[in-house]
Amino acid sequence: MFSKPTILCVALAVAGVALAAPGRALADDTASCSVIEIGATNAKDPSIPPGLKPLEKKLKKPPLSSWNSFKVMSSTTLNLSAMRAAPVKLATGQASLMLREIEKREGKRPRLALAVTMDDASGKRVVDSKVSVDAGDTLMVGSLVNDDGHFLAISCKP
Amino acid sequence: MQLADDELDAASAAEVERALALPENAAARDRLEGVRELGELVRGHLELRADEVEDRLGAMWAEVDKQLDLVAAPVPAARPVPVRPGAWARLTAWFSAHRTHVATGLVSAGAVAALMLLVTPGGKDRVITRTVNVSPPIPPTIPVVLKREAPQVESLDTPGGTGTVFTFEDDEGGTAVILVTPNDVEGI
Image 1 (cartoon, rainbow over the protein chains, first blue to last red):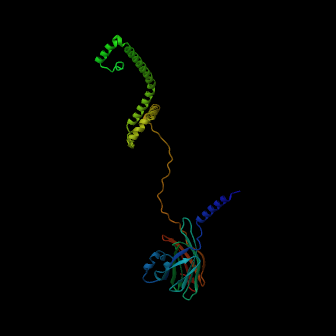
Image 2 (image 1 turned 60 degrees about the vertical axis):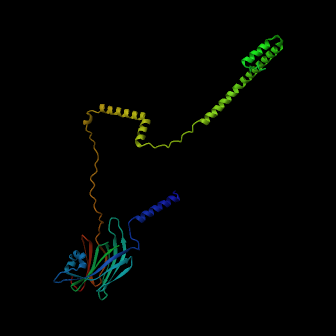
Image 3 (image 1 turned 30 degrees about the vertical axis):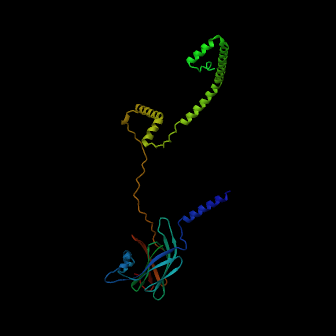
């Protein structure tokens, strides 16, 4: 019914459109993530160190507004490869971060699917979660330790 | 013979003529007449031959004259280098070459203009109203801001505790807070 060149051209066109269309990221995508370990407490004098100034607005919203004094316990930057868990050495405990995939969407920010784990100082798993966040958005994962807070502020960009 | 050929001067010729007039020189007189007749015959014959070759000689001389004219003809001057006329010269030349067309066009335009003036009532005071579609003003360009989507917790496992998820938006983007409260601790 159709000649071979016609079929070939149509196939190439369809393939080109399919490749050009936004969609799931390829497996070799990478992301750069900053991880800040934050200790939160209530003190007589509220304080937010300069390193946390970019997060100041977030720290003043619930549930983080339960504390008024924050400090940076550790800070690191990770380069994540897809589906490879990266360990995060913390001042207290440890964590891991894994980039599951990056979804590139037309007219929207790329969306990163992450897997996060967090263990306490004794090595007990505290959190194991899978989340999806837009590039540049902040994910804060933490727990109560006595009345203080122990959090990780994670922000990733492809 | 010299007398017959008119080669004697007048005095000698008169003396010879007087001698020939004597009666005893009748034979010489006859011989003179014969020589003269023979001379006439020879000259007549030569004139006839001359007439015959005159035509051929005329043609030959005409050919010689032609060749002489060609040789004597002036060498043609070197071909002048064409000079490109200026724009105005070309314009005027074009109008000169096409003046009939231009004139026809001008006459036609004048006729149409005159016809329009005659037909159009009110002349230049006439107001033409046309309805046109005016597209709405283009809104000012809005900087492209990529749409945001709130963070989403797909799964949450909090062994030995209770997980609470908070999400909020601010001008810096979305934020998700996962707070784990140990089971042996009252919530905040």
